[in-house]
Image (cartoon, rainbow, N blue to C red; front, side):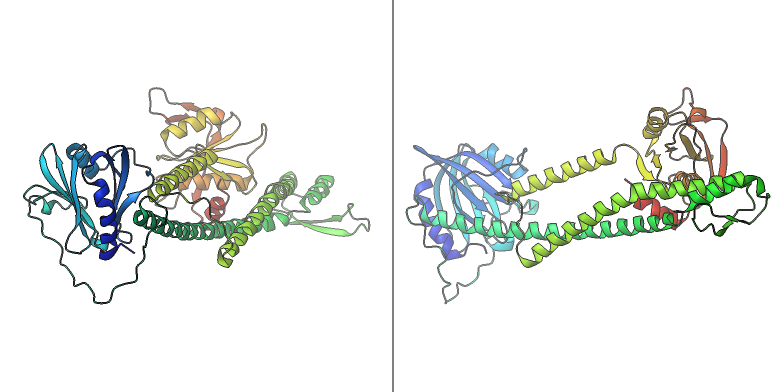
Length: 480
């Protein structure tokens, strides 16, 4: 709550004899609606704080300075240019209202700093000797040059409100000290509430994200678990390659891995050779192993994070949450918040690094350039000669690279994932389908004399791709 008229009377009665005949040594504007004047009197320096914040409009002597922005706001610059070094002739309250006038004499003659501490419409105006408005804190240009007109006054109520400030005993300026302490407590309580609200929003956002990630990883793991026994099927096919006719849809054989030696039926793809069917079973088993190796630790870490998030939310709900150290001023709060945000963004950028990064269905890393510079850096800096390289055919778009071990071929699912990303991050995205070329990185050369990212490709193959929302959602959930 802003100071009331009778409280303003109390503080003006206290500070007027102290500051009268002093001069403005320094002028600061720590926040958009707060001024701090350092007033020098013989042998002492006092700080006069004037706040036009709607809920805390007030003036009083302050016991400490406040952090200031690196560049003073325009109103502060105006005050410094015209009134630094000016003498205070008088400070008085106007007609028992919430208005205080500071009469000063500076290098340009008599001036008035008029403080309207009227709640939501609180303002500070500078008047010339004829009481015309020279400038105001709110920046109302229409007022400049106009004769000052006080705000509509209200009748003072017949019932007097309870006295809030009786002064702190043993203080040099008892009323100012109590007012300052009162608003500091208010500021601290408000900042704790704001910190709590911000933390709740952040935790709930993190909670949703973690739940989505866990669900996606569990789905991927569940699909891969179906391939648990495929190494055994591959070994059985390998032992019976000569007995499998091309075009067969299944084969029955003795399962030598089971002590009871049962007969087992293994489905086959009639479009593939016996060797191709064997390779498929081994590949899918490797996919299962990769999922077990990569996804289970991720799920465990994410579930631990979920427990921590839910516990913190319970602490907040039960009132036992301890907020971080609360800054001592709104400016400091904003500075710390901005610094934290910048640090988080910097950390995030460091974590993500250059390029978009995804993990394929088979657990292989996929890199996607964001622009021409990154395309060039990805293809000719990060990628190795045996890595898979992809790009949408005949249209601007991102370079896509799949990291492969030397001598290995890209699994079909990984090839489909990478091609989907090449289509998504190209000008073919709007049509939702198109051709994507792919080759080994060693067959991609820089185009001489052309812009970064322009390449010449040889020995490429192509496949037709249509955007698949399910596949894309799974890839985005595996983005890092």
